[in-house]
Image: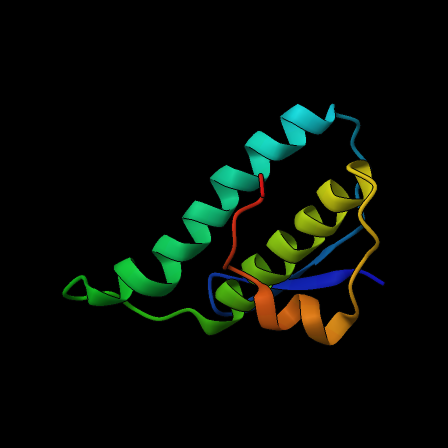
Length: 97
């Protein structure tokens, strides 16, 4: 099912699923980077004067981090968690633990 991302607050863009190939180490590095960026979006950017909250963008980013974390765990042979567990843990934890 395609995701919908608001663009310029007046149009919606349909995004299709994309498959990519990368090594587990590349995936680990990407996950670490996006997890850090999500933390910044949630806790640091909100303290900057004039910052405008974008809850839908934050929700999409958190979902993407969860998908990457699950893919990394599968690559390491760790059984996938339930949907509720994944959503509750998005943005936290250490992807290399």
